[in-house]
Image (cartoon, rainbow, N blue to C red; front, side):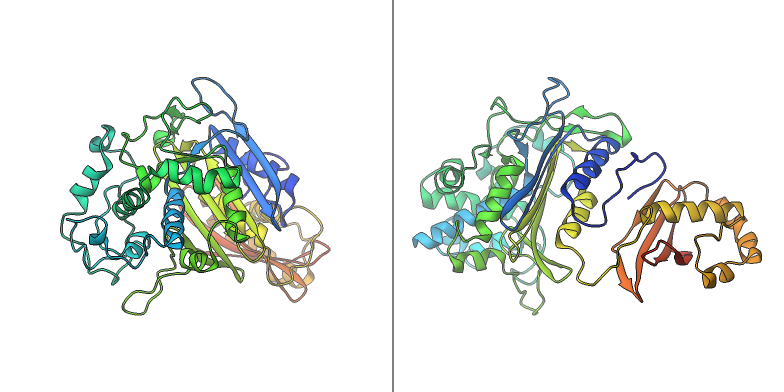
Length: 454
């Protein structure tokens, strides 16, 4: 994405290059008003980019370092599923066990499996469906009390017939892991996962005075970021209570891809999408999403808790990962993470390299020319120069001027066609969005530039 006011030289690179990615992400962190962030990218089983940006806390002005730990929210869930699967490998429980066997007294516990909890297909209502901390969640609570309030009420749907995100289900699953193992989740994860993998900056529900924790911030309604109070202790627990560094999450990703954490059978159970009773896939395993990007299977999850947003994706076949953690709500970088994943995966079709400025810069210049009603045809192919004749350009100019100046210019996934680079463009104006297609040959000559309704 580029546009008016963007940092010079900080356009999204057309292919994965660590230095160019670092410059682009640094510019995005600044322009989005994010207080602090960490980025780790791995390729082929090795970390190829690790960067820290901004401040861990506005109050202390401490910088983010590679050792800073961020709240990772719902990325916690894959660790809870991993813990349950380790116990299954130990032979002390099965994800096919009924909930009632380990946690009596819950609604339909004899009909709901542990696997249903981890796959969000149990039917238990979600206790944290909003994107802000409401009044009930400001005070501390025992996780079992949360379970009592939300897992002893009627189900929202018959188990396994629907998929619906449920933090409640994960509190139940996490408490079952603690009951069966005889250990708090923090102790179990430290002994079986964190320490063996060298995850020294990972903590499950750490006390707020733990050294090296980032502070969460909120930018309310486009305002300046301010520190924000976390959820009351006990609410997040197995649903989202972990803190970790981006480097530690990359270690976890690579260890999973290399078979260092779970048995092959358990890894398959963690990462295989569940199928509903009607035959439809959920595109979700146990605590982790499963999607496809340019032909690659990508295992991913995001997280959001008070003051923090987190994004983790890894590609098992290539042992690659992108981890992005920020300590600011309000500058949502989910699209930035997706752009980086797409760069890492790379296109499946040939896209010819093109000399000259990035496509967003070329498209914005052409738009400005058409708004003025005077087109410089020196870099246009003859057919396009004839198609965009003076009469057409003059006739279109008032309509395009009325749109004003775009707030941003976004480029979509490039592809190749007829020896040309084809780039979808979106102009985001104050009142509407308009799309365009830009075709260029390797010498930078524009062969097509068509503006259309979005």
